[in-house]
Length: 215
Image (cartoon, rainbow, N blue to C red):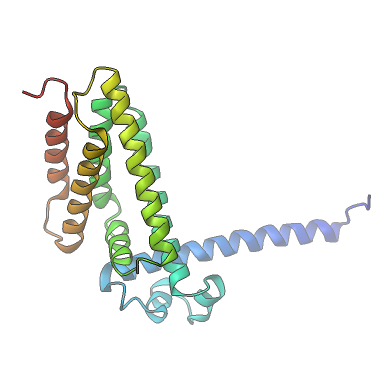
C-alpha cells in the first residue's frame, strides 16, 4: 500500500471543501428558486430571475449545478418535502395516541405555511405546471400514494386499538389529504386567508369523524 503523502491529504481536503461548497451553492440556488416561484410563478421563474435572487453574477452557475429547469424544479419539490418532514414528523411522533397523531399531522401540515410561507406555494406552483408524463410528476404521485398508504395503515391500526370507529380507512386518508391540499392551495393564492385557524377546524372535524363514538 502506498504511503499517503501530504499532497494526498491536501487533495482530500480540497475535495471535501469542493463538495461542501457545491452543496451549499446548490442549496442557495434552490432557496432562490423557491422565493422566485412563490413570488412570480413557475412560468416567469427564469434562470435570470433566480440568479439575481441568489446573488449570482450569471445564469451559468445554475447551469453548472443543474441539468436544466426540470432538474432544478425537481430539487425544489424535494427540498419542500425535506423541510416538511423535518417540521412535521417530530410533532406527530411525540403524540401517544392515534387521535393525537392525526391532529398533529393536520395542524403541523398547515402551520408549515406560516413557518415557511414560500415553500408550499412554490411546490404547488411547480406541480401544477408539470405534465403527467414528467418524471417529477410521476415521483410526486408515487410519493403521495405512499403517504396515503402510510396513513391508511395508521388509521387501520388505531381502529384495531379501539381508538377509531368503523369506516373505510383509505377513504378517510384520502379525505384528510384532499382537505389539507385544498387549504394549502387556497393559502398560496390568498395571503389574507387564515390557514392556521382553518387547520384547527379541520383537525376538530376529522377528530369527530374518526372517533369511535362520533354521535
